Amino acid sequence: MSYYDQLHPWVVYRLLPNCQNRAITRFRRRNDASMYLATLQRHMPFAKFIVAFDPPQIPSTEQMSIRASSHHSAEGSHARVE
Image (tube, rainbow, N blue to C red; front, side):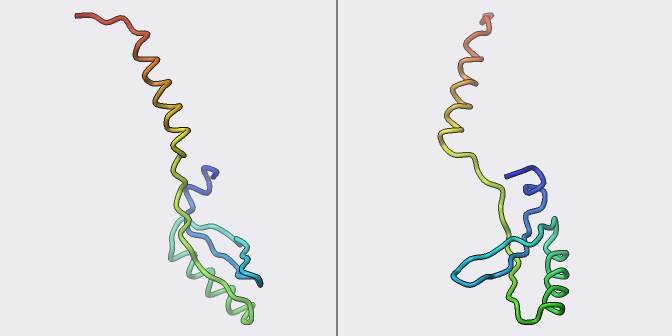
């Protein structure tokens, strides 16, 4: 997920046949997405649209373990003063 996508989590989707959908555009605020949805519905009354919140993805456990192991190895390289 790009940085832009993380900053704009509200997505307007067009619902297509066979349980498919297509992201139309993304917004930072839900109110903006809802107003755009209303405009789309006025211009395309027979199409189906929804607004959905697409949260930022959490790093997988594998990526987290790699980060943790690199953090621990960096700590071990420092001299310890007592």
